[in-house]
Length: 200
Image (cartoon, rainbow, N blue to C red; front, side, top):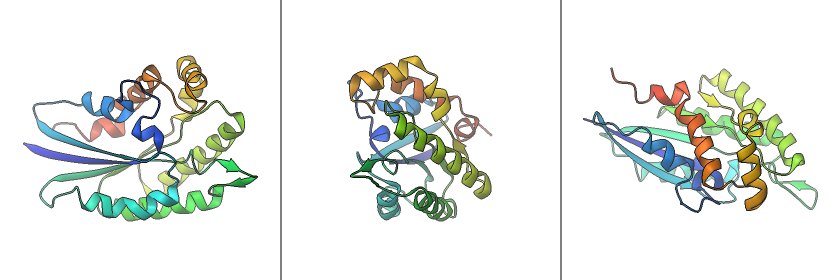
């Protein structure tokens, strides 16, 4: 039986902040892939407030601790929202640097593991959303160049009334359980994610 290990690296959306059930999208997405044909171990390594630059520093050492040599090891990244935050007029990670950082992360990761990237979702702040939409497009272009599957969730969730309502109600950034369910459904329906579990 195949032993699949997946490390999920990202920010508070990966960790599931705001979800009163503490399932977020990672646990929901992995639960949907339950099968008697393989064993699946998921490591949620989302850290609230993390930028792409902070994830770059930590991801490989944390993956190494969790990936035996004899297992089928894979990595999912999801970041960008905290890069787009602005405090005192200063952006946490400038747009150009965010894309360069994503390039370094994905280039390094794909040399060792199958890799997926999930873009940043919308929030209740339209200035943040403008930046999220732009960086999502940049990430998509980068992934096309690097041949890394990328899921741009911004557009779908921006049109999802439930996601936007929950984000506004919780804290302006994070949804509750139904919002995370909607995000997990986008991922489980994604052909690149499904291909990881297809039976030969």
